Image 1 (tube, helix red, strand yellow):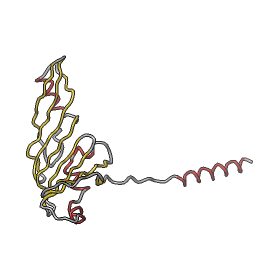
Image 2 (cartoon, rainbow, N blue to C red):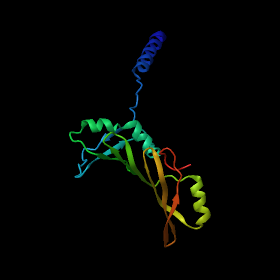
Image 3 (spheres, rainbow, N blue to C red):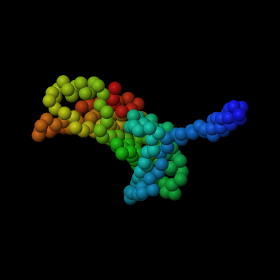
Image 4 (cartoon, helix red, strand yellow):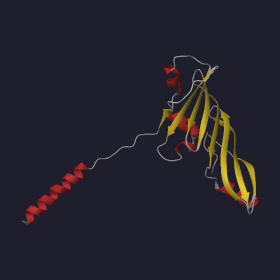
Length: 182
């Protein structure tokens, strides 16, 4: 009787162990939004909703994410009409990257805009030191550039102290398209 119970438990254990599968997650992809509209003029504008593998993946390095998950030449080949430039928007719930490509797929001007980003310790220390008694209630990160370089990056931070409020601007250093946080 002991052998029967032991072997039946062993068979159940082996069957359970065999039924476990390893699930591989798919890599992050950029998908075309079906409500994109074609604009009149020399440019064509498309909006893509960004599907992130984890929250904040796109916001950490928008240009790098775009380079690794989007091929503008494939889009240009699929279009019936030939334009001088293409305006492509990549959107998440936290913000967007708007990029302009020429007809050969080269990245021209681009602008990033994200709201309620995590501020670096350096910026938080500067806020505390320069604005004692004020509380930061919201912020926005804005960066502009061309090619793979960011030329200008800054934060707009809304501060509140009682019934007074003010918005300040702090310049941010950015390299290689990454969000300008330390």
